[in-house]
Length: 415
Image (cartoon, rainbow, N blue to C red; front, top):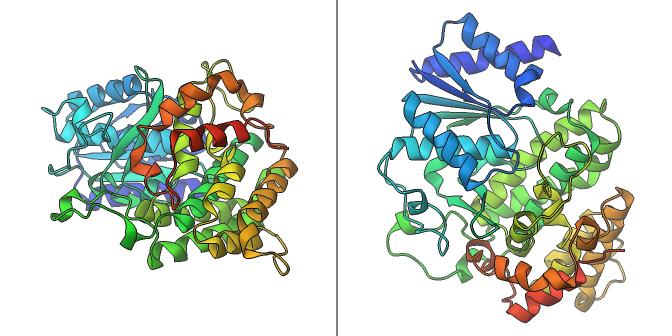
């Protein structure tokens, strides 16, 4: 394993030299800073005399405050290249740091998604960013999205622009071997929902409005023939390998396959977008009370992103299936359902039931109630979902506040 990590470090060193990098920012988090993937990169940069500074204060599930701290570090360092080694939290933080260091006069809300921020297009050139994911979930190495908790509103939002996509992504499956069981599971649930949501999203030719200038086009275009290929491929890998990857940390085939699935799904949803599972997940994470998940070495309450997304998936796909029910049935079949006698009008129930069985088999918390929410929280959860138009408008079925309330209520208990 150590030899493989050294090879990864050498690749980064050569890429940085090819990019002409002279002053590099290495971003990671406190936990990863002690683990082989980061050590390999550190050793390589030192060995080849590359001038770098390490920022290891990335917060798991970043906030606007943690983004701003990383941005301050990046501005002060005047870096000409960035390396992010970690999960989606690290890579997203590094994207934001690169963006605002490259646009030093911008206000923080300038690039944050509307309606919370101004959603301005990115017109400044960014520095090269090499992303090295160590989880198999977010696909952040492939996307132009950076997500964070906006503390003032207690809701997740983000920045979305093709301009912040990493220059390179290095997919090294051995980086995932140290992931504990629940982190593998929750990361994998993110891949699952990326694939399902992008495949069932509003089609690209039905999305509106259509900006006259391409720079104003949203990062998420709606489902399309190209994103469909990536979404279905990722979904098939999840169906075959996720349970194996969770249950056996030594199953390198499963861990490697899920690492690739994360990137594949990232390419798919990074183009097509996601919809209700993700839109509803942001307040679920942002309004967390006292929940602390197993296997996460953190000093604050959090709902892991993949868990916050997947807990609403049975209710969401039961709701959306009346639009394009054949896609919902196809997804259910990939995940193991026998659809030979299924009626098209039952597509949503078939997929929802398939997802419940999948989650039950993997010991997933029994709905939102199991992570600290009750019916009394539904109005706040709905309120936190409403600003997430960047993704909720990609739902194939439009939704009212009453619909959202019903979906949250249906997600309180899964089994």
